[in-house]
Length: 83
Image 1: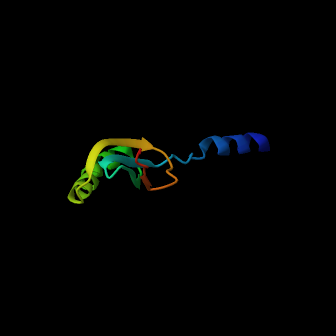
Image 2: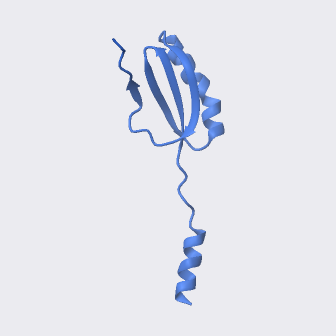
Image 3: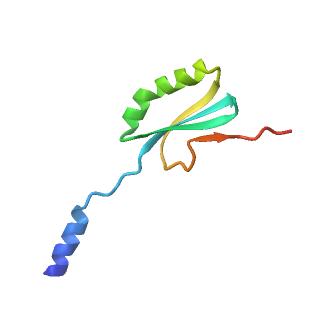
């Protein structure tokens, strides 16, 4: 019976959901930015426009925006230019 209680407790334990992030790729400068974490994709969707406007205000040229569940190791990735 003790094993059954342990199994039931394990089944009821909430699993940690991976956080949501906004991934914005820019062409000028050639970078990838991560903004977050957010509790839901809808929260990230709602707030993405503020981050896009901030980057545009800094003269960045945004080429893509993606909402994804991840755990980025770096928040800003500067891509090397091809020479």
